[in-house]
Length: 73
Image: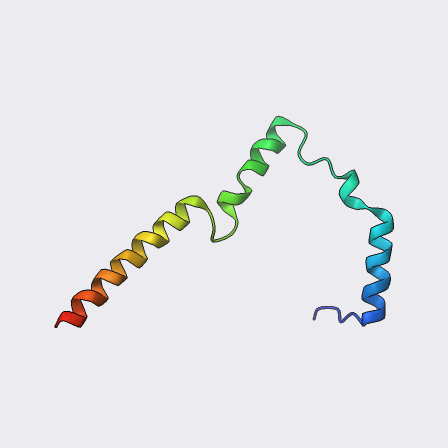
């Protein structure tokens, strides 16, 4: 079960994080292996990977053509 934050807890946590500023300490991948792995994140994760978008477009085009044919019957 996920934690339920009260508005006060959320504000306090946000203030703490603004004090820590973890985004200023993040370096991202440093080694070549790490950079290679990180470069694949977009490919592996999400429905917005380039190949997947092209595949979805072809499927939608096919469905559109099928609907058009069925409407003519």
